[in-house]
Length: 178
Image 1 (cartoon, one colour):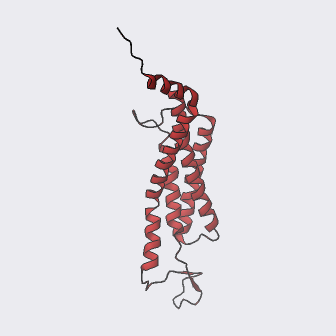
Image 2 (cartoon, helix red, strand yellow):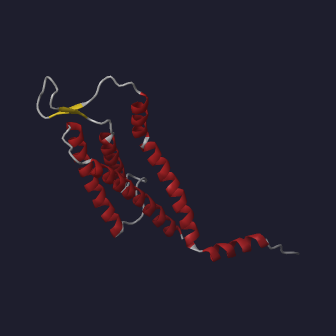
Image 3 (cartoon, rainbow, N blue to C red):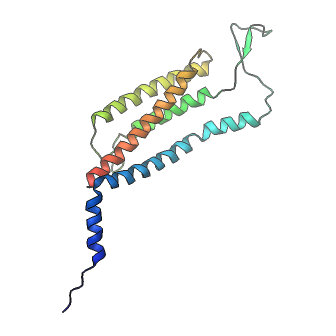
């Protein structure tokens, strides 16, 4: 009776032990980044639509901002066509979805433990949600003097916190499987 040993199986086990848990974390992080980038690209569709419509439209109406109600439009200036309102809404949606990812819905939602960084990211998301909402209200009412730079920062921070929460969840799940 001859016993056959599969050399490939033992070699594969040796390679898995040699690579360690960080190779799995790296592949999970890459997959998570690609997933998050796809979700962000889908989320940016309304903003890209605004840019496309603005670039190819023949605008007959120009938005104006006036100091007082002025029938003759003497004290008015035109408002540039910049999508600050869309950017604020995008920041609110991204922050809200980041918070929803922390809530347990049956078998869905966050499965891993909360870390101190998770709590910090959750508090940041709540703050960004509130600031984005306030900036949207200011922009929609036409009284947002000088809030343009803050709009970009809020959107950038919302995307960064969302990415961190996605990456942390995937990383912790990969480490739990080891």
